[in-house]
Length: 255
Image 1 (tube, helix red, strand yellow):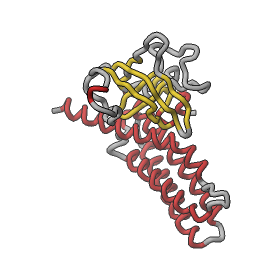
Image 2 (cartoon, helix red, strand yellow; image 1 turned 30 degrees about the vertical axis):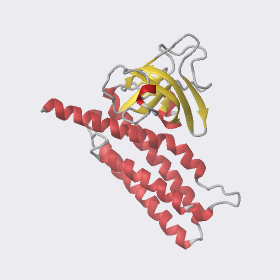
Image 3 (tube, one colour; image 1 turned 90 degrees about the vertical axis):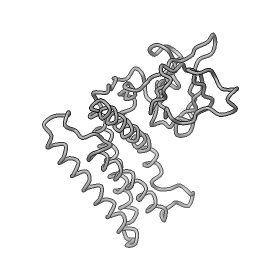
Image 4 (cartoon, helix red, strand yellow; image 1 turned 120 degrees about the vertical axis):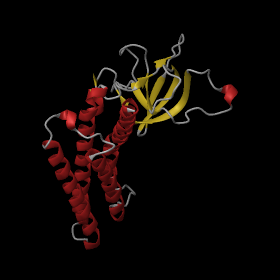
């Protein structure tokens, strides 16, 4: 719902699709995300921390989306080594060429969504962090039901549930004590960063704790919940990295 409603990639550096007759960037849905291929023209020679790659040059047009869900904007790490092969086979400077690059579902969005700008970073950080903690609470609830009657498994489940509860309470107390959104501490340096780390820790702990309850068909009992939470956890990494970059920019401006 979040990634379909909000264009959270709006503040990022966005490349321009290099469209040739009969050829345009394309994204194919695959298990857990998308396979992205095509060429894009970069607006800056300095690679940003994150780069948004749209499928079309303008707004949504018929046939321009990756699937009927309308995913048409994909976010990739700008500093990652996305090109392979000898240097002579690479495209010219300023042109990015990708072939079957995997983009997790959590790093895809829609250009037609409500754009989140740089000034909305506080809202984005709070919303995604709150959803991540909500997902961890659901995981610990299911783990507790699995562990009912199994003392060795019940203790870790109770500890993870308590950790999630305490972190939610602490974050709620911090946010409710603010006068307005401008006082929200940047995710990389404050309570949101801690909450994100706790959420990741709980997800890993819950997944590990439920291994003892893997079904006869080999399916992990929490797999469906972890898969559902993965997009939000991926976006929390983007939020954290984006906040770090903004802090560096403020520091440089002050200097």
